[in-house]
Length: 96
Image (cartoon, rainbow, N blue to C red):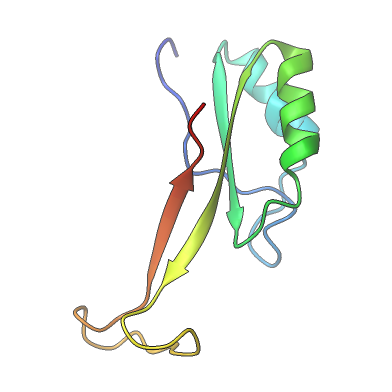
């Protein structure tokens, strides 16, 4: 899979959404011959250090990020009505 990088990946630190263990994600990435991997858990960076260390140990470029939320009204707005007023998920990736 030369040149392909997963940029939207959840781990066990995405509560109620991700079940992947970081060491298993990194091992599978190495098995597939990929040279980079992102971690974008929901609303947190709890696994960032573990992920960074595991990737570096495996010779994989770690891309740190998170899945953030935006809402056109307030942070408590959970409505998913009209697409123009719905809440959105946004992937943020750190650079360098």
